[in-house]
Image: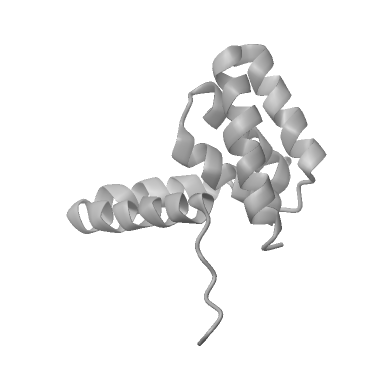
Length: 121
């Protein structure tokens, strides 16, 4: 019997988001294509590094209480080489501006994402 890995809750959420995005793209290809092009341009290396941009996006995701974006940008932070300390400090800044809502996501969802996704890095 093959050793199959069970997907984590973080991976399941990312898969769910990507499936929904695929369906949405089929229904509104021009809008999604334009949005994706804009987003890609925003996250390109520039005066700010891609890591810095992911850390900013994570903070905004927490402040707006967007669970899918919190997961997606925590992964983006890790993919761009952010340390757990950098990620948690970004969470602290978000909590300073967004209060308890951002802090509750930082102490639960973000730490869970870092723990699950760090095993992949």
